[in-house]
Length: 242
Ligand SMILES: NC(=O)c1ccc[n+]([C@@H]2O[C@H](COP(=O)([O-])OP(=O)(O)OC[C@H]3O[C@@H](n4cnc5c(N)ncnc54)[C@H](O)[C@@H]3O)[C@@H](O)[C@H]2O)c1
Image (cartoon, rainbow, N blue to C red; front, side):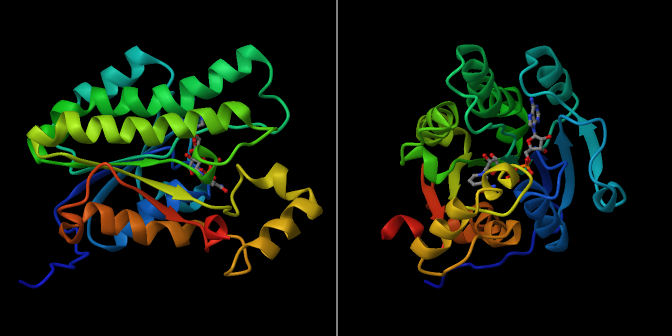
């Protein structure tokens, strides 16, 4: 038996939640579009970045608003690939209980809300869900405790949904990126000691770029990953094996 390793997504409907900036979501959306898929994206901002406005249908969607998410989902009946990328974090602010709850609401409950609201559209397509976790699902983070807890929750949620929805033909996986140059990491990257420490520890000796994450998303959505569900794939330049 030969493995199917086609990354041609012609005819597939792909939805990337949280792709409005020049980050990981946008890189994943572009990779799926380059591979032939019809791709739509969302974000919390009124508009996405200019260079993607012409490429994608964009919807402003707050993943903490249950009615908004279900209204959005009710107008979609066939989703082949759902990528949950929306997240917030703010170094040093996450010991405040209200902000802690907000981070959990966006990153963890938001991923669940979108997946559950789109469950019928995913079932019809025997679709794939790709959640975006983080190395902080496994490492402690003294200045981002909510973010770490939310991402550990995302990794765990991925396993539970993989089991719950296997009967519908839906595969659910996660990607745990390492340190990636995006707007979300901009504040942390102002700290040059931190930035250098990451580079020094990472065997591939650099921060990741959003495009470094996209190939794994294509793989997980493809038939090459037909027997992969409930997994969390680490894409971190080797940071976590040191
Ligand atoms: N940058 C990194 O180093 C890194 C590392 C590991 C994991 N990640 C994860 O990758 C994913 C993408 O991160 P990024 O670095 O590209 O970030 P980004 O800041 O570029 O994008 C975050 C996205 O989340 C959306 N968002 C924020 N709040 C929202 C809300 N309430 N409702 C809907 N959407 C909302 C924004 O609109 C934006 O599109 C996130 O899940 C993040 O946690 C990033």
